[in-house]
Figure 1 (cartoon, rainbow, N blue to C red):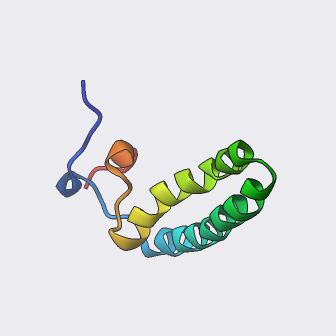
Figure 2: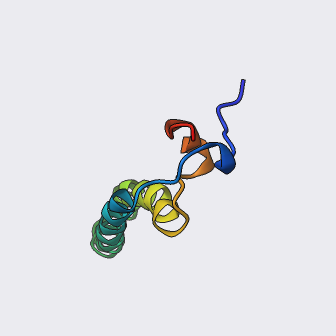
Figure 3: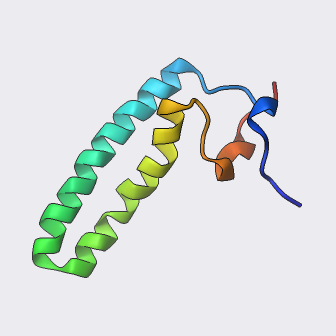
Length: 81
């Protein structure tokens, strides 16, 4: 059984949540650069590990900001039209 849902069957995410995701993605981008810059200076594995959380946040929030829908894997979380 597949949980993937087409875009035409779900509602688009509201503008307030898209603005909220913009701020999350902005601060995640700053956190990613900080984790890579300061984490790699001390320990390469630690810097890459610290950058995993901002990468996941950017993966979820950037499609919401630009398209209005979450990534395909999270499409089942939206309500029906």
